[in-house]
Length: 183
Length: 109
Image 1 (spheres, one colour):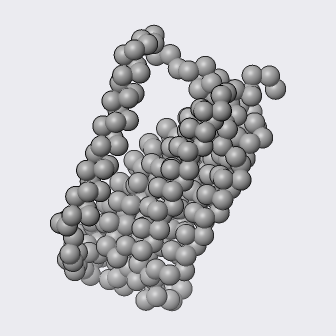
Image 2 (tube, chains in turn red, purple):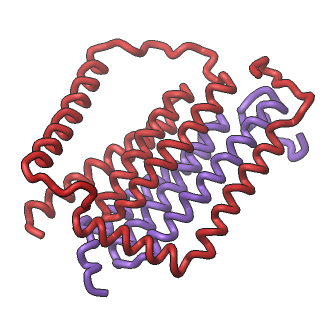
Image 3 (cartoon, one colour):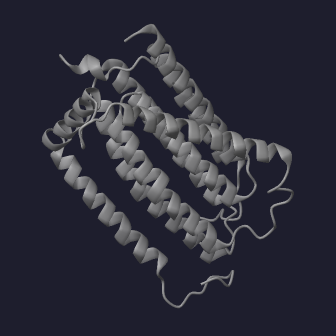
């Protein structure tokens, strides 16, 4: 690997680390629970990016699916169900700083996506193929998971079923209404 | 272990360790400082995530699969834990009408 690409990877990791830490601090400091959970989504997506830079591509994808997808939906669902946010969010949704931030984010997104599209259309890869390093990494993980750790893998499905059944048992008690008035 | 050198990234392990420790510290601060049960729970998820970052960093640094396998199972358990934990938050709200964990100081309802 050349020095330039090494440096680029390290810069990318540093940026991802800063985003992860900043969104983590925002999760802890926001007063509004919905805003905190939104920052948590950013935090988990940034962590998934860190996994990918650290050459664990499959775990990055699993992180986005499970954490940023399923678990965050659960969090938001509970926040909305409990109607925790009774007081309005003061002094937001306007201001020059926010507009500049939004514009910068949009610019970065467009640049990154545009670059990716340009690179992809320049050298057409066969459909369904991955870079050699990625393919090796996923094959290696899958072989290890399905051979050496097959019993643990199957047991983990039982853990999920047991957790789901348990939650159903203790959250659906009959004859009790929530004191907040929400169903 | 031929061919595994391909998987090794160029990020220094110390950076990733520093990131993981910082995230764990932020999560611990959240658990200690906040009183909203949902935010405390989110902070616990962040601490779990910090441990995952450390596992991935070490798996990358030592070219060993065990760290990645661990992270896979931690993600599975985290999904179950999130469902159970948020169910507990719901049950807490039903009992006390609040998610302030300082108000939920009794072991028995």
